[in-house]
Length: 179
Image: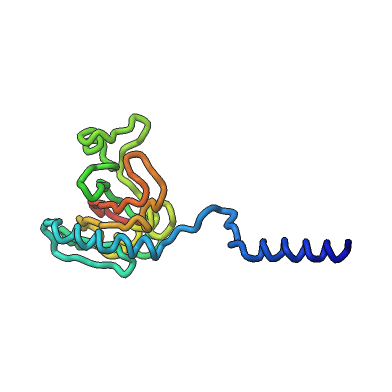
């Protein structure tokens, strides 16, 4: 009897030892895999994206910053309070979000429960998507720019109103100032 319990315990232990550990927080998001998958999509998009610019910056994180007008202010430091206007688009040009009411109305993304005003966020503070902090670190106050942001630095695999999961996003931004 005792030998059968030892054998049974050994079998159960062997079965459970072969299983992958379960992440109690759900599946792990594959940052590197998604960046690798999206890089050629962004490169192909940039080959057809014709827009006037004074600079194109390819950040090491995969975010592309296209500067249309260079501001004469300083670049923001970590935890600076940044003020801006923005329009968010999918790669096909569909407007999916903005902080400007007239743009929201013109593109059928207006939300009666939303307060449309100058957007402010703390650079690196986590109150905006990481792609915003990456992009704004690379431009000066007063600049107008476009950020091409991989899904990893945007909403990842979360669906949002008008934004499918794993979407590469375009942000047209106007850097109004900072504190």
